[in-house]
Length: 106
Image (cartoon, rainbow, N blue to C red):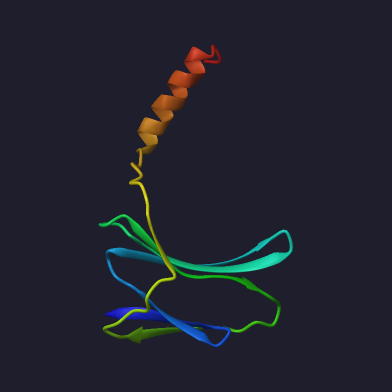
């Protein structure tokens, strides 16, 4: 299987890449504090695995390698998530139209 090998602060994590897993790596700033977050969401089992949840500083090194492997690292945490029913753009439009009519704005 293809996987990400993520190395940060002398720790390495192997995260899955597959059709069932949506794996994302987020690096963002929140009020001057940097964060690094790596998760994978399994669409079939509706579980979210948290692989990395850390703060980052300027100068920190993050290595990302795409590799072939049969094993992935054990996640730090696994959370069950609710299924999200996606609405079509038409459904969203009709709901908005109905709401505006009820408010007398349309």
